[in-house]
Length: 79
Image 1 (spheres, rainbow, N blue to C red):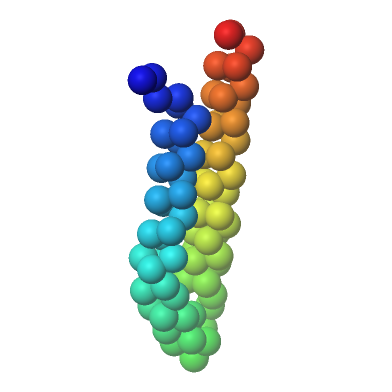
Image 2: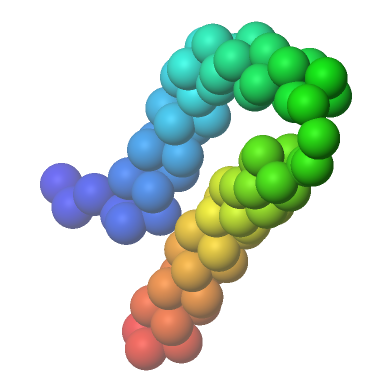
């Protein structure tokens, strides 16, 4: 029995989505503490860096999902 690539990608994506929230919740308190501590000091370089990191991390899933869709369409077109 031949396993389709779409099933493997879907299974990995579902596994990643279900396991990620527990990992990400641990970081929220640390980021919040850094930003709250910075409010008492001058400058906001740390908050700019954290905001840039959040935007960067937010884009990664879109790139991965878009790549998977393009790969699927390429496989579908070649058949």
